[in-house]
Image (tube, rainbow, N blue to C red; front, side):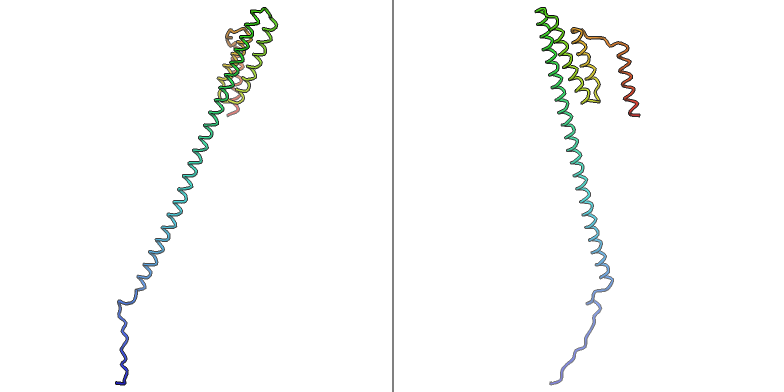
Length: 172
C-alpha cells in the first residue's frame, strides 16, 4: 500500500464560464453605466432649467414691484402737486378777498411753476404714458387762467401730432 493513487483530472464542460457569456455581462454593465451617465446629465440639465425659470420669475416679480413702487411714487407726487395747487387756490381766494391783486398773481404763478415742475418730473419718468402729461398740463393752464378748463387750439393739436410723428419715426 505504499503506492500512491493518482486520480485523473477531468474537465467537465459546464464548470467554466463561456466567453460569450462574459461578453454579454460586460455589454450589460456598459449599458447600465451609460444609462446612469445619461440620466445624471438629464437630471442636471432639468435642475438648471428649473433654476433659470425661478430666476426669471424672481426678476419679473422684482420688475413688477419696481414698477408698482414707481407708480405709487408718481401718485404721491401728483397728490402733493394737487395739494399745493389747492393751497395756492385757497391763498389766491384769500388774497382776492383782501383785495391784493399782486399777491394773487404771485400765488398763481408760484402754483403754476410748482405744477409745471412736477409735471415735467412725471413725464420724464413715465415715457410710455402721455396721458399724465397732457392732463396735468391742462391743470397748469387752468390755474393760470383762473380755473376755467382751456380747450386745445388747432396749433396745440398740430404740435402734439408732430411730436407723436417724431417718436414713431424713431422706432422705424
